[in-house]
Image (cartoon, rainbow, N blue to C red; front, side):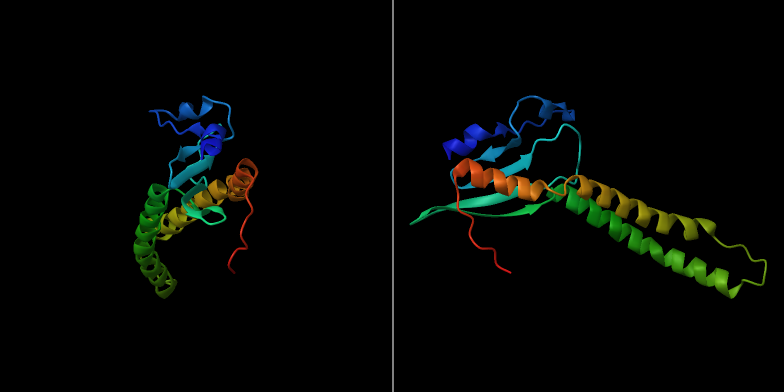
Length: 160
């Protein structure tokens, strides 16, 4: 795994995100004897960036690398909480819309915040995720190609 360690820059987390500007290699991460954690070097902040987390196991033919591509666990958890919060408050939206429809001929006051805020929060959350994932759209393939080229590896057929 020395070839792989030499081909990447070590991940450094500083107070600011400027730590990724140091170094020249296209991949950042950590490699041990049995695992690896890699991501593409980008010169901007994208919390929705794709990471490769994998294990390495010796086999008769060499080393088998098995892993998954995913966003950071903290980001996935934060977005789960965001959408759970939004879905919870969608009840106020449904209730306010029902009140608006039932009282459409009358002059009863409707809670406009309940009509505007929950869908706005849902749209904002979906937009942030869509834009972040759009910028990370080719990173999984980039990391896979990087491993194949760096390790002169033969990819196994993917299970479908």
